[in-house]
Image 1 (cartoon, one colour):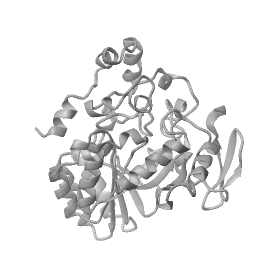
Image 2 (cartoon, one colour; image 1 turned 45 degrees about the vertical axis):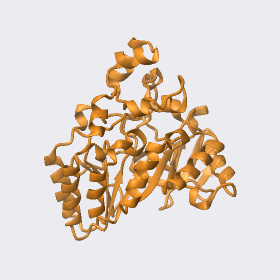
Image 3 (cartoon, one colour; image 1 turned 90 degrees about the vertical axis):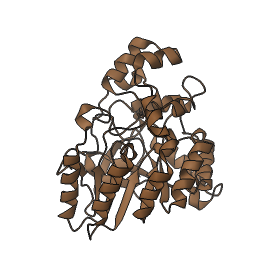
Image 4 (cartoon, one colour; image 1 turned 120 degrees about the horizontal axis):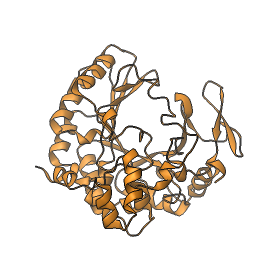
Amino acid sequence: MELWQQQLKESITSPAELARRLGLDPAETDRVAGRYPLRITPYYLDLVREAGDPIWRQCVPDPAELAADEDLADPLAEEVLSPVPAIVHRYPDRVLFLVSGTCATYCRFCTRKRKVGCPSMRVSFHEVLDGIAYITHKPEVRDVLLSGGDPLMMSDLLLEDILGRLRAIPHVEIIRIGTRMPVTLPDRITDGLCKVLRRFAPLYLNTHFNHPRELTPAAAEACRRLADAGVVLGNQTVLLKGVNDKAEVMAELFRGLLRLRVRPYYLHQMDLVSGTRHFRTRVEQGIDILSALRGQVSGLAIPHYVIDLPGGKGKVPIVPQVVEKMGDEILIRTADGELVRFPNGYGV
């Protein structure tokens, strides 16, 4: 058993154990984890310094997740846009390929918290093969993003098999991997994994650092190994209340990412996912944060600020040209000229 697999085995998945270690109400913890699964690696839990800090908020179950809201389990309409179980085909030339149903640590703000870690998200190899067959018969698909769950939860052997099958499809030009392993389980980035990834260059890997305290020496080493293997690294950050909703925090994060050879790519406004409303910020706050960074950090360190619109309408960059109205509700103009209403922070 490799070190990363041992860490996974030792991860906290029991609400009672987490409640005991952190001094939580075991009944509340159990109630939340009964609906939205719990897993925290020992490595990531060790980054917590105090109750309610930015690491705690991202991984510890919160009763606020069960608060009644009007949001949707699947606001991006992924189920509607899924022609076969493992594929989400939203954009003409790109597909999301859900090859894993689990993660090393379950983020409390996850877009797919409706099913990640749940029995409904178990991905069989038969479903993976069906996904590859779908891509094979869609010549317009040039770009495949492996996601889930976390693709790096798979063994090197299985990942190598999937990458090899995708590389054999003539019209697939770009393969991307979305993973949070450098953040929550950096030991997963082994020499063996990097050897596999190097074989399939060019590969693009987007990871998911949300706070400067996640930029540990172990995370830096994981990113170094990936970059040295020829993997092109980017980062997607989600704007989270109480985690990174201050310009000085974002500046430290984005500067630190560049030092790790990771390019800040997207800053996401929170999706309208049921059980995550306590993480939401107003859109103006994201605009103000990026405005404060301009001139203070390198242009390389400033990501695109985007909203993934409800109903599967896709990502829209938040720039003055697309925002028609501010207030408790904003109007966003899509690429085809449609005006879409988007709730703005729910009075935050």
